[in-house]
Length: 174
Image 1 (cartoon, rainbow, N blue to C red):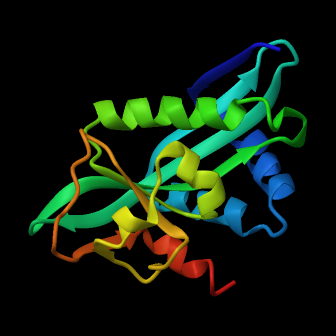
Image 2: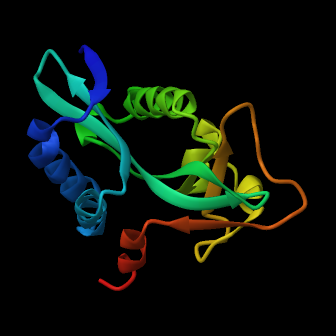
């Protein structure tokens, strides 16, 4: 198995949608990606492609966030979703996608990356609820985590604002 990580292209849209619809119990994740794309809020989408089988092994999506640190807007993203096809799970595909994405986000100057998810899963990638507690968000809680990029820059002692793209608000409304 030869897995290549690359930016998603137009020809990948149907396969990504199918992956999301089979990876999650409800269609909301696929609908979220569609809505983020339509709104122009996508920042980075990478896929893991099995070159040998010519199959989509996984995908990771990051969208724009409105985040203020020390009274200034900073480049920030939300990871959602991360999906790996069942046949490729527990083989390092998620790790490869996250690592490649974080490298690209770091070079693009993104300061924090946020995720809403299971801490047992996302802690291994450096996401931490303690870091996210520095930010006011409607999603605040143990499942709201942040990863400081750019050498660990995070606010200290002051609650900052973190707002997801509007498509996230529609998740609970469906």
